[in-house]
Image (cartoon, rainbow, N blue to C red; front, top):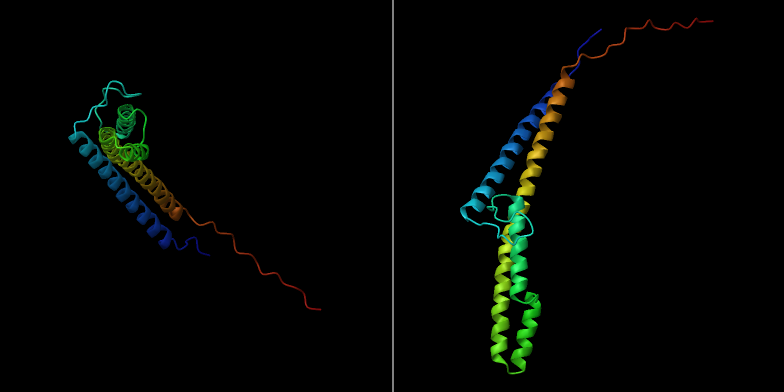
Length: 172
């Protein structure tokens, strides 16, 4: 009667999960750090009229979101609430009516809102990058826990039932 079992694959899978988890945590941390350093290098401060985090330096996901939000608020204020597409239509109408001065003003406002849109997209890319980095770090931690659990199970002794006597059927 044997009290051992083959656990090589479980141990290898557990070890691989632990190594992959560590790599995920490092990769997520590096990504988080790179995005943070790039945002800090821009020296952006959330304006005082922002809905939240006013006066904060943009260096994380929440401050990047706050900055993107206030950029949109300022851009829409500068265009009297008109969007890029609406300003294009207004510029076209003004040009068709022969009002080149109004058409030029609408076009200038259109460039303002277009630049704001580009800035917001860049900041939202940072926010998404933070989310992906956090996800990867979380997955790495989960892989480590799974790997440790697999290795723990592989070390557990095998349950062995005692040998039974063969059943003898009387021959008639």
